[in-house]
Length: 246
Image (cartoon, rainbow, N blue to C red; front, side, top):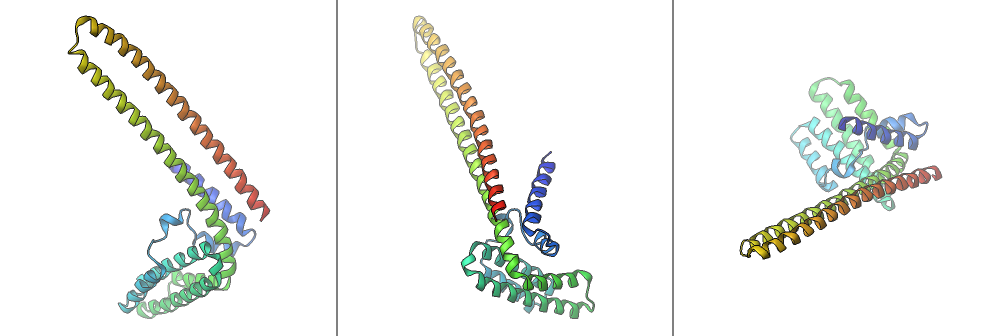
């Protein structure tokens, strides 16, 4: 079931990317292998300069395939940063094109070292050539896609945080109820028969109140979940309307 839900999520995001790319099949093919459903989790937190330095170190060590992979990671990082800093688009265009050029040169090193050019290497060089040629469109569509994804992920994160807070509050109340009950039981041991009977009647009344409070919390949780779903639907409608306006 979990796998099916994940597959449906990916299908929705692929549909979003197709919608953003329109009839531009080549751009869609490139971006479908370049963008991430969760860029925060997928893209390294290390700064871009460090990623580039790691790739250059691999070149010095003549580990060219590793260098190619590290340049790919650097390109992914630069593209994501470009979508988050559109005011610096021109600078990031130069950075991405430079990284694509470096990656192409590393590809040549791989061919020289291994003595042949595999189809995957040829495909990778075409990938970087196309990205450099269409970099304006690449950044434009990537920025729209990532904006949408980050909004969705932010809404999910907020929902999870609120759910955790409710669970934390429930646990706290249950603990307080348990401690209060244990305290009453300890006091009853020191009471006379008449006092214990009265205390037992009070305990029954308190237990009834606790059940009522638990039922109220259960209903609140159900209503909170319904409200979360309503918020999700409103957000979805708002995003759909915004995409149609573009």
